[in-house]
Length: 613
Image (tube, rainbow, N blue to C red; front, side, top):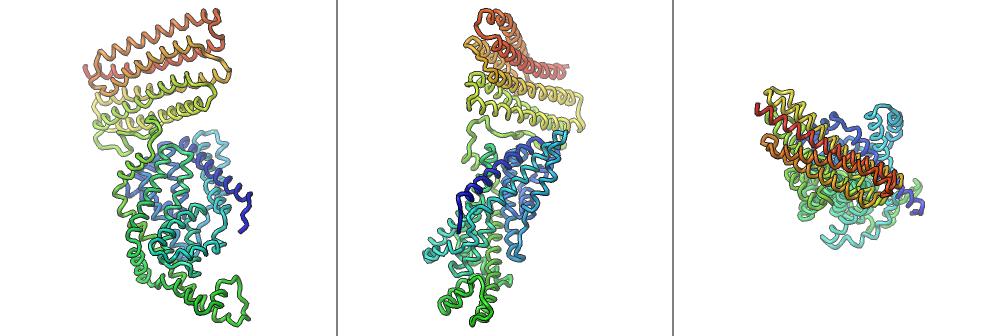
């Protein structure tokens, strides 16, 4: 096998294209994901059973469990699907991939999704030039989707061509007589082989070749297929590398599901293989264990015929032509039996795995969260905690759930104030600054989406039969949600001011830093007080509301002091004029954030007054 350095570079480039496609696809989804797409996915994954059916259907349709699980990782990365929902879809995808094995076994062909890549590019490129933001985002999603399939095809093309060079595996014959040790060895071979060639279908084909040549028996063929189930998880793991914590947890969940499934099969390996042999014979496909013994018998009794069986071409004039042709016909029939037997093994294994483990979905989620912890508690991804897409009939009760969600929303946005203050003290143009600013942008994006989700939920609530008091509560809550989102905008606005300051190479002195910290201190106190009011709106205390107004006055007074002192400080050369401009912009932005906080308090006060009346 001739494998050059250029082929290696092409392989690395294909992996790079795969990661880039995943990134573009995920970002396009995040931008295009309106309520319609989110609601469709919510309906498809409403419970573990519909989620499993969705995973099975998609995988059977596109005949690639790798592609379907990568899409699931992308959905989770975009916040369109929760970790629990993704686990059910992945379980279904594992069963769906057996459909591909059956198609190959029965018909000998596989749908080549890469053939649709260029037409998909043709359709998606015009969308990128659309003036509508959602249409443009949909174009980005389709481009990323196309890159994804193109890269999977390229990876398969540029990995070492092991399928056409089965002689590389001839050395494995010396490890076939180690009892259960051989089973473990060949499980690892299947795992590594699938990781390298990125295709469980190709591993299936190589397994059939090895069995046909008499190198391994049916037991070890099943071990190879078992290992390929774990090896196929490498693709979503690669995809999750460019994703967030939830995406990494999804990939880990896929690995855990397949790994635990393989472990229980290994514990009952020989009885389980015998069960599948009996099932294959019951289906009228013969004994799949007969092939390796038959080929070994030919090798021992007639080595010349054995060698001619696997020659590339045999002339019809050869004296052993008729005999070899008859032997080949018998072997072809037995190969079909082995192929069906491996498909039965793969299917029964995944069905039992699904039937047992689908009841432990929530346990999986907890285990995966322990295995892949968030680096920071703040890094938990977008996910509504108290409300969901399916509304109860009692709209009055739903309002209480919405109030809890708004409190969670306020707490999440409050973290952005700390991030903005930390950004002020972070070294300009450093990697740490860029990382922190990206997190600030990400949180602002999450804030926008939470605002839409909560507002949509409240609008749904308002469609029910409500009392006048509840209608007033919903109006006040919609106002609160809008103001909390403005707080998030204010925090990101502070980050944008600092980015412009960095671009102009302006420098803040210690006096500026100290005054900005005092402003942030006032705003954080105001935010803490506001969160306390939000935690129990119905029983908000008048003293806490008065405290909020007092803090607001302190913010305004200090802002006025800073403005008055700014001109004098510039004239006295405490800092440059340009730095003074960004300083004042930052102070004004922080003061506006305080205004948004007091607007939330006003909305809470209005609700208390209405209830009192």
